[in-house]
Amino acid sequence: MKTLKNSLALITGGASGIGRLVAQDLASRGMRVRVWDLNASGIAQLSSWAIGEGLDLRGTVCNVADRHAVAVSARALIDADGELDLLINNAGVVSGQGLLETSDEKIELTMAVNTMALFWVTKAFLPGMLERKSGQIVTVASAAGLIGVRGLVDYSASKFAAVGFSEALRMELGAKKTGVLSTVVCPFFIDTGMFAGVASRFPLILPILKPETVARRIVRAVLKRQKRVILPWFVRTIFLLRPFPVGFFDAVAGFFGINRAMDHFTGRKP
Image 1 (tube, rainbow, N blue to C red):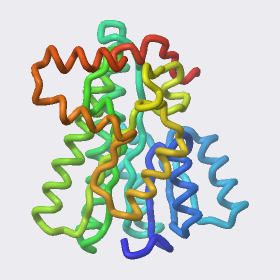
Image 2 (image 1 turned 180 degrees about the vertical axis):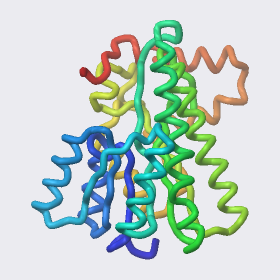
Image 3 (image 1 turned 90 degrees about the vertical axis):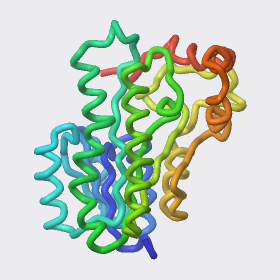
Image 4 (image 1 turned 135 degrees about the vertical axis):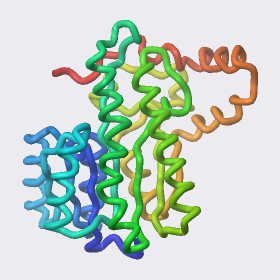
């Protein structure tokens, strides 16, 4: 995008958390922002805020795990507002239990929202970007998509898939010189209700991230057209450890408390 002003963005899971913060930031910069979420009250509050600020920010209730719902909502958005300049795939869920304690239904939901929705939403808007030879698709993954974490088997699997999705898409779009950019964002645990109760053994190098920090980095990735965002910086050491024997890799992960982080997880309360 040459400019954000009057460009059109869609943020999934945009009625709360970092999605909401990114939506507010981009709208404040002059973008026309649309959000999809299941949280109708959150959408109403966000829309009310935007009206008070005089900004073009609106939301629609849409279940991104339902490909038919995505197709209908995407068609309505394009008909009303035009093709997207920016898509931020941000919607996500977490169960936060061991594999055998996680119900089949929760596993299916995790994969449907965190992984399969990437395909449905991206396929709905990518043709318009390709036609205009411009656009950016941001996939909000996780550091748990770079290293497996105890208590997050389904979540890590879904986020590993999200990282692979964004990377393969980047290769595909780049090889064809489409002008469309694929960006992946991999943050450590974020201090939101979604990960309430998680802890870091070494908070100076692996801090629980503030939502505002992550939101700012996502917006920066849009402004600078970055291809990958990993935060905090220490998470990048995972790439240096991968060539070592598995036993050493696991021991280092254990030392830094990666497999203890979820010990007191409570998650978002209903």
